[in-house]
Length: 203
Picture 1: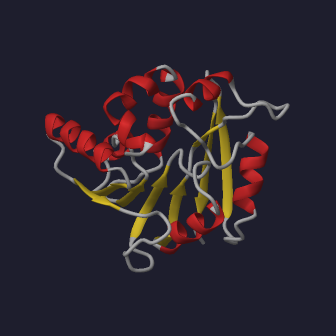
Picture 2 (picture 1 turned 90 degrees about the vertical axis):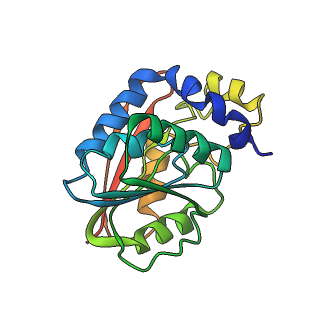
């Protein structure tokens, strides 16, 4: 069983330690979705972002590679009576959807976990409609001097092992290096673990 399957039952509790940043991330995500949008969320965890945008979206496909995370997400949506979210296991590098399927694609807090994030961005952009938005907020795990944040070291004791550690500047440069040819905008939300909220607007 992998790290994410193990932490699924307590994932929301862990995120609450960085609650101010998390709440701002959810609110900003909801503001970027238009009424009636079709939304794909990859690496959705327990579906907090999917739930946050569900009042505006017409339909959301909430995906993750962890079955346990999806089980928690399904139960949360059941309790909240949310009916416009479906669930599926998905590999962010190999999405079965046709080109330009979704108005908004979301992949939060995942690009620092994978090797070759540029390939993941390319696949996410493929299924995004022209004029759509790719939302890729990612927690900043490195201080300006390059040292990992203390809380990240603590997570490491439980098996958390990101493939990359980003500062806001290096994260933005990585996204621009993906050569999408599209506009990238980013804002930083400060907190215990800061968040670089990046949005790529597809031409």
